[in-house]
Image (cartoon, rainbow, N blue to C red; front, side, top):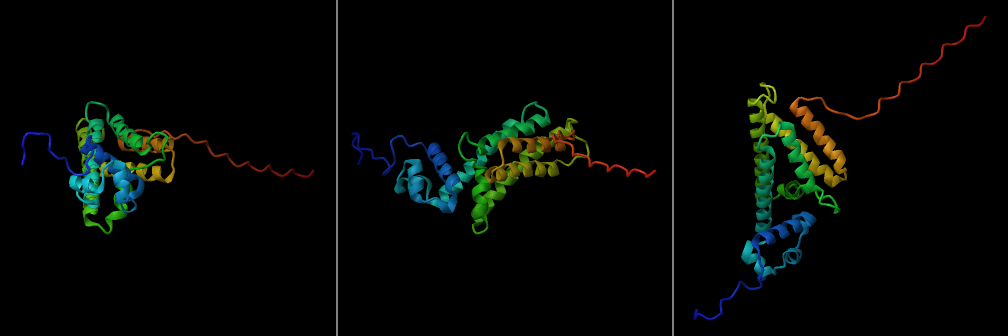
Length: 229
């Protein structure tokens, strides 16, 4: 019975400075590092500073926490894309803003490149886990739709040919994004991946692609044999 004194009890084990957004972010980073299967509850507790009862009370079990982490990542990813693709910047600049933002996430400073949280962790679980597969598909479709809206506007404003198909271009734009995510984890450099993105943007916008490559050396023509006198 509440008697007006300071006897209100907090959830067992929950730290005084508990911040659900920060805890979810910390859990996401733990999953990002170890993958879903490779991340133990102890690792999640250490990452969030919350014991198991607190984690269960705040987010449910490990699976529910992972799904919430995916939702948050997709939500923030869409916000970043819409900010990059919106406004009055030209189509090419808008697309590069998306790719530069992605590369900043995939290459976190001096740490080992981590790629995309959604693709890097959900792909491994999607075959056996229908809920994860649905989250993965929904996330990819959401990002496709954001690209498609920008291509539709670009076509209406004459930035791309009137016969261009925004839905197809959106899939290509997403495919480039996926390439950056996978190859960053595989060891490609940030500079090389940005060059790939830049070439893809030029292709989608219908502008000449800059390729810096040394011309192949021409084989020497053998000298004609001398005629005998």
